[in-house]
Length: 567
Image 1 (cartoon, rainbow, N blue to C red):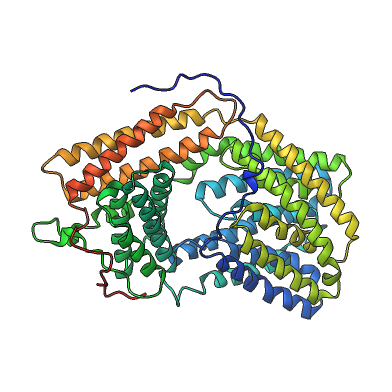
Image 2: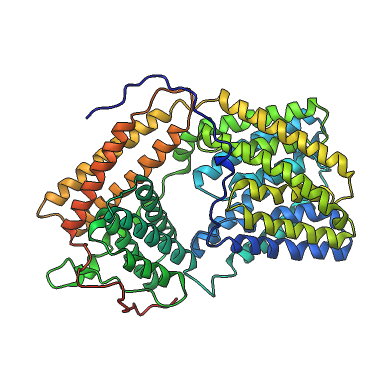
């Protein structure tokens, strides 16, 4: 097997226009948008009634936790939201205590940068997001620069905890109405992307991008279904069988009916019964329905990797975040800024999986913030009509940010920027010109210094991670091929081998894409990656055929049989 000669790479062209291109909105964009409004409004309006709007910054810290975990099943969401609230309170406590002990701006910036690095690493390792660490960093960094006394800290934390508890209830509120809503959406997305890939493959125009997107969607669907480790319900088992059908379509697109996959996807998105898959293994002489999901049961029983083992590969990102945030804050202080945490948070928001994505985020952040300060100047006269008007403007900005950020980060930043500026006016009104000027300067400082830190701290282990991912795919492929060729292979072993190989292929593509966006490293073995993917897909197809999972050619897309399951 040949490989690319490892020669130094050249600096690639940096995207600018492409970074600002708008995408399609998320299917559930309204859920976080409505949730954050429902979480922020009651505590803020109560403080307006009490005449203590100056305390709204603390309640808003807890309320913003309602932005998290909307893609997770409700059993898993309950745990994740609880951890997010606790993490927010932990960062807030460190910030408040530090602010009460010192007013040295350099110390405050340093603590804020270290908190940002910890929050970035933990959120990436646990895959908490979106919005990941940015909200937590905004809360902790902003409160570092609010004068405190130790006696005030417990009361402020209590306000944030109460609002966090309310945000938890808001996040869990849809559970009684659509208990399997997140699982249904993930399954529908897997079926839809599988149908798109099958159409391109059957048309003779197989797209590597469509295939990678489909495998990623199927993998995400499995992660969603497996996130709830409690006893699976009848509905969830039916959804798992549909994801199996999406997997089969990826392995054997020529034997797949895309229209049927789309019909299943449309049915799953609704609130009716889950469609029947018509699995051929139910026929006489097949492996049997009980064996259908043995691989799923085995995977559900596997404990997740310990947190410390997931933090190791994130060390370069954590160092980038700490260094970039600290330097951005120091430069902002040197320029005489009163709110250096704006530059700190701007730097913290940049860092993505690689340098190319970090550059794109820098472009998006700068453009969004510059447009956002103009929006702030426009809404300021309305916001200053009174405390109620200020709260209503904050709610509108919260809704707009979550409604638009799925199209592109810069579009959401257009609403995030006036939101951050309006929050500074909760204790009292500030000069508009000064706020706008400081925000523009801190945005530019944070973006330039933060990106410079990313250039300085390179991830030279990216190539080694690609090599490890290639090895993992080769081993998984050999195991699956051996079992597919063995006449005595058990259904559980075949199912586990197929799913293990599919997961390894997804990980290889994600690792290769992330490494390709890094700079100042030797060339990656792109040819080996492509060949490994092709060999893995052939083995997946052979495993599917060995399992007897190919669709029944006699069925049509108009099949209307359904499982007797609840929505």
